Length: 149
Image (cartoon, rainbow, N blue to C red; front, side):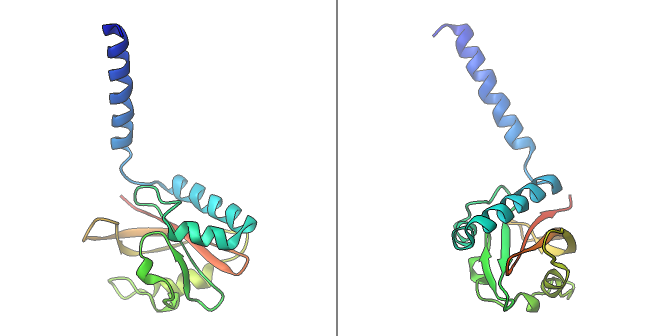
């Protein structure tokens, strides 16, 4: 390898690293794209999609999907497996807002609603404003949230 090729490789690697570092948090657009992907996969194979969510197969930085079933219990969660089986309607944020009940209430097939609440970003101890994009697909209420910066 000539030094010119070595320099080109080094520049490409450093450029990719700086792009990755610069996009530390997910955006609304990325959260929407992830939710769209979850919905499409859910329509094709619900069981496989719920399993993929639980195995963190969709996760990207601080973005992750979560779903609850017709009984309101969480069926899949990309960040908190301990939430599986919890009644979503019982979830409240640090200010006491019942965001879980609101998520269930606003979910409609073919539409995306927003629910805003305070929540810890993965890896953080601080509560931050989070916006969950919410929809209903088949008998599942699914959402992907992003954090306001």
